Length: 393
Image 1 (tube, rainbow, N blue to C red):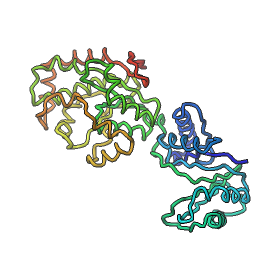
Image 2 (image 1 turned 30 degrees about the vertical axis):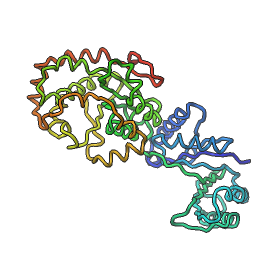
Image 3 (image 1 turned 90 degrees about the vertical axis):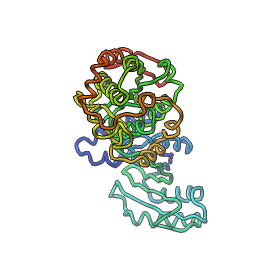
Image 4 (image 1 turned 45 degrees about the horizontal axis):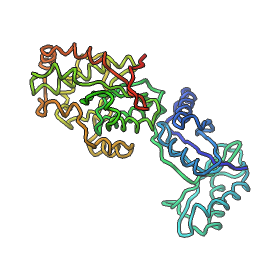
C-alpha cells in the first residue's frame, strides 16, 4: 500500500542534544496549529511526517508547513513499502508524470535504516536507471530540472519529488516571549519575523493615530498582523492611541519631540511587556537609517528601562530588510499609505539628543501621566478583528 506523505525536515533542532525531543514536540505542535488541527505530524528519524490521501492536499499542507519556523524544507511524495521492488514500481508510475523527456533529473538517497541491503549509492543508481527508462530524461547531478529524494526508514521508504523551502530557525515556543514595537512600516514586521524564527512567541504593540481602535482592523496594520500569523498562529496584536502623548506634547520642543515620543513608546512597552510574559522589547531599528536611529538617539530614548531592547535589524541595510519583507510577504502592505505616529511628530528632529535634555523635556511635559493613561486604555485586536480588553497574564 502507498499513500502520499508530507515530510518536514529540520536542521537546527537536530543539534540540540538533550533538548532535542522537547524542540521536536514544540515543532509538531506548531505544525498542527498552523494546519488548524486537521493534520498531525509524527517525529520519525529527524523529520516530521503526516500522511494524506490526495496529492493536491499534500501540496497545500506542505505550503503551510514550510512557513512554520523550525522547518528547513518540506518534501511531498509517496510512502511506499520498505522494499526495493516496491520503490522501483512506484518510480515507474510516478516519474513520467513528474519529468518530461526534455528535462533532467537527479536522485539523492539516504538511509535512516542502515540495515537495508543496498547502500545509498546503489539506491541512487537503480532509481536513476528506472527513471531514465520510464521518461527518456537525462541525469544531471549539478543543476537538474527535478530532484527525487529517497529516504529509507525502518518501516517504509519515502519517495519525495516536490520540495518547499522552509524558513529554518527554531520552533516558536523554545525561547521566551518578546513584545515588538510595531509601526506597520517595512522594518518592524521583519524584526518580528526574525524573532519568531529564533523561537520567541511574539506580541505586537502598535501606537496608532486613527480615530478609534476599531479603525485599526481596516488598516494595513491588521493585514500585516494576519500575514505574520501564517508563521505562528499565536501572534497577538495590542493597540493604543497616541493621543495620550499628543495632548501633553502640543508645546514640545520640535527638535526633541520625536525622541520624547520614542521614549514614550518605549516606556509604555517596558511597563506592558511583563503583562504578556515578555522578557524584552523588540524594535525595527537599523543603525543610521533615519534620524532617530543614531546610537546617541537610541541611547537617550531607552536609557534606564527595566527590560532589554533587542534590535535584530541593527546591522542590516535597507535593501537587505526590503528583501526579507518581500520574502515573508509583508512588503506590499508595509509600503501602502498609512499615517503612522512617527510621521506625524516633528520632521526635523535632533539626531544626537542628550539623555539629560530628553529627560528634562519629559518631565516638563508631564508624560508619566500619559504613560499611565496609555496602559489603562490598551486593547487587543483578535485575529477575527474584534476589539477586546487585553487578556494578559
